[in-house]
Image (cartoon, rainbow, N blue to C red; front, side, top):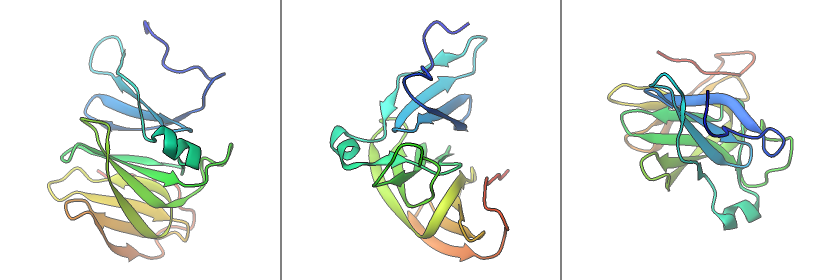
Length: 168
């Protein structure tokens, strides 16, 4: 049994679609609190929370959004999150063209990626040349080279309903 509270559904909304590196799963609230959980032991361990947004960014309206709104790159130890500059309650699943990049060791924002199209879902590959794959609202896939930190292309017409991205 957990010895501390994971989250209080009466106080915050937690997105159930986590991303992971190894046995650590990263969840996020709709207001941008990262809630990591280590599942390597017999009892899940809740790790220290951290925020995607500063107080100033929160006041400006920044918050995460999308369906599969986060992806983690194990080799780079980075977290990629779809972000909105104009967050509104109950709109946290809306797509975005803005992806913030975080160092998972420090929890600090280290960059931004811009997509040419609105993205609903993200996934990162775990190979030695990691890619970030983003399903856009037109059913295509935006592709980013994570070692270079840049958008490298779009594959059109992959899906009639762009939802989740799963890669192996």
